[in-house]
Image (cartoon, rainbow, N blue to C red; front, side, top):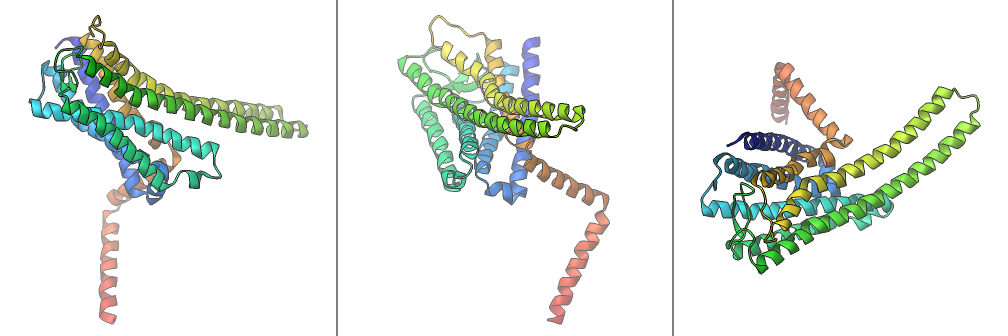
Amino acid sequence: MDFAESLLALVIVAVAAVSLLSNSLVLLCLVRSSEIRRQVPGVFTMNLSCCNILITVLNMPATLVGVVRKQQPFGDCVCHAVSFLETFLTANTMLSMAALSIDRWVAVVFPLSYSSKMRYRDALLMVCYSWLHSFTFSLTALLFSWLHYSDVYASCTLQPSGGVHGGLRFTVFTVVFHATSFVLSLLILCFTYLKVLKVARFHCKRIDIITMQTLFLLVDIHPSVKQKCLAEQKRRKQRATKKISIFIGSFIICFGPYVLTRLAELLPSVDVNRHWGIVSKCLSYSKAASDPFAYSLLRQQYKKVLVSVVNRLLRRDLYPSSAHSSSLDTDNHDCLHRISS
């Protein structure tokens, strides 16, 4: 194993550690907060986090072993199962991100009718579609024996049995799979988030007009206060643009190189370099580590749940005797209540 592959192995370990910790924290927030669970986005977030954890636990270690040993990490049956799960989970995560963008689009563009347009049942139906969509392509690849170990990507993945480039059926399958997973999700992300950005800028413009009118009326206001108001207006616009850029940009940067590489290798004249194949695979894995921060952990609602969990653990560690005595007092109170009754 050369220096480049050693570095890539360390990257996989780091991405796996961050992904496992961050996605576990998201699931912890969902378990601890009934309010988050009742909300429609919680359905998509839970599905996305579960898929990311499975990718972290099953696919990333398999790729790590493939990078270190430079050969198929497991037997054929296990490798086929890992390939099946990779195809299923990757498509599922993409469609989950698209579903989250649709939910935010409805919430921002149609705020008054959001509860009727995006119900809990609708969210479950969208998740069921993503599962059915992903399972159909994974099962098709399994039936045609297109799930093998690829030395280019050092992982068990979609791979034709007849060679690197495969036949016409595998080519059609690969193009349709990525078109209905990556391209479709990307189009939905661009449409929904650009609509959200348009509405956000419209509201910012209205707020700016009201603010400027107020500043003109308050002629005696200090110039520094006016400057702070104008600076806040500028930050508000930049914040909305930054969030939309993160959602769309991270999707393209993480999944784009891998998808384009898989499509390019279908051409007979293209031979993908092993180092680049592993790099593109690591980029797709990095999405599992960034999703919790982009969609959940940086939101105020999740922060409050995490802070409450940490405070509870600190109180338990700092005052174990008081917690024990309070539980004893509760038990004694229950016993006295039974005796008196």
